[in-house]
Length: 318
Ligand code: AKB
Image (cartoon, rainbow, N blue to C red):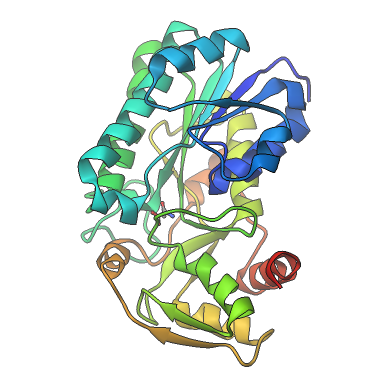
């Protein structure tokens, strides 16, 4: 791939950003990818390429960085997730919306080539069909996070329609990875469980045993994001959010999959406020449109994801 593009990643030190930034640097070259975040817990990450501190609500600094590095594309990953957002709803709304509007305005003014905005299964609510949730359906989110993602999808669509901004968007399920931790989501249990399985052989889960949720292993999420962003514009038929699916499982099922590798592992259940959020989300997602429009295919199933997580986490925590 040629390197005419210069890419700004906002929220680069988060769970997805950490891995997407590495993948983007591999494709475009380290001098063409500018990682930004409000703070970065891992000093080594800052050393791996260009890093700038950026509060995503600071539109002036964002514009300065776009000028400084002649940015042509923005991946806007900064957001407050579902569970944390419920603890501070007004700030979650402010952060999630102001940051996106900064990105969209800069994309319009400076005629950027493309922008990427991550949406989520959090847009769905209690009256959405729970099994194989279609792309176009009843969307009545129950969390501030979900409301901000639904509004964000529509802002992307608006900027595409009115100003021709090439904004692209995926509705991620819960993401599972071993490099960086998620922060403040409802699906976070599916990452925590691996750490506790390796550290203590026991995990207390904040969701009930039969709570099914759509999930995805990080290599698939990175691949899906890049496939969408690299697809020719005429293949992108949806400018709100594309459904994206891979695996669907319950805490009980992931426990059984982990027990194949760690037979002594046990789980107990103590549902908290996150149970209500999980209950409002789909069990599984129909992503036919992504598969048809731009060729989406996932690679990891529950068994292969669990095996790969354990192999890689063992190197980190044991
Ligand atoms: C969360 O749980 O809030 C996120 C999401 C599904 O968007 N992981």
